[in-house]
Length: 455
Image (tube, rainbow, N blue to C red):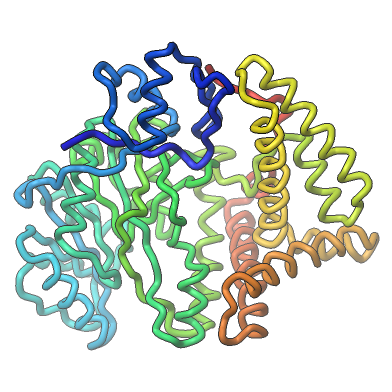
């Protein structure tokens, strides 16, 4: 198979073509004329020149490019582990349908003390006497795996054996510890189905990524997670003390160990929506409550915002409605980026575009952090000054209104309310977790004062 790579979403070529700025964090690669031909081939999806591996390996390691495809693994190399907590006939039927779609693969179902009996054919079933949580259930199954790869699959997702084998193909690169597809949500034409299909926390978007904490794609959900078995055991598998966030913790331990984790959205696996709005809000609250425990294990990784100080001031000015101040700081930001990237030979147009991208991205992230973490503080501060109230109002309404304009949901008012309350529910969970562990570090932003461009 011909090797192909796709450039990362942030990819800026130099004017002469002998360099590229890409990856997360941004890394500048100055290349020779031969290297420039490799960059040309990547951009045009053409055959790569010989002896490309030295440069493409560096590009892969920084997330500047991503594999465009993989060879399927052999079915004899993959075992599927399904943690199951079956509560009714419908969830048992869903499990049966999932197993039927995985014919040809070895399957281990770990019944985590389900209240509804699990009687299933086509899989080995192991039962816990007491409910131990999804991390322990997966570890029980992983302990029985003798194959090179293991696929952890939740019982309420739809995935085929062919998809798992394709994902496992990415693990042929031994530097890759795990890979995950895009988890979409089934739009069953109900309001919840429609909303979850637009804003599911499991859906990480349509752009491939090398996963890293506090980057564009900072974690992988264990809904469908295909792993190198040896790598998984090396880092200690899932942390059974965590009932929530155990998948995030595992991914971060892998990256801290120097292993790669890939997100491959070209493969989509639909997930069932929550059954009620109340269940949706509870899910967001529970996800938020895991932030403090994750921060204890990985300090500052669960921070709600990481931003350059100059970009942050510009973003704050925008959200406060201080447009004249915002214009000044946006101009300063553009000048700063143009100056700091002067040695890269990236065009002035690209540097300006990169600066503008930094401002818009930081503004979105700041608005998200306000709603998903800091809204109680801003609500209290608005009693003293109207500026925090303006920021809170903008953060709540502007993203939701843009969502209305972009997606045109069937129930616009309900969409608006649920989107705002779901973010506030997540924030409530963050505060509850912080109180439980008696640490506010997960509430604090990470602010940088220098723009670091690796070479």
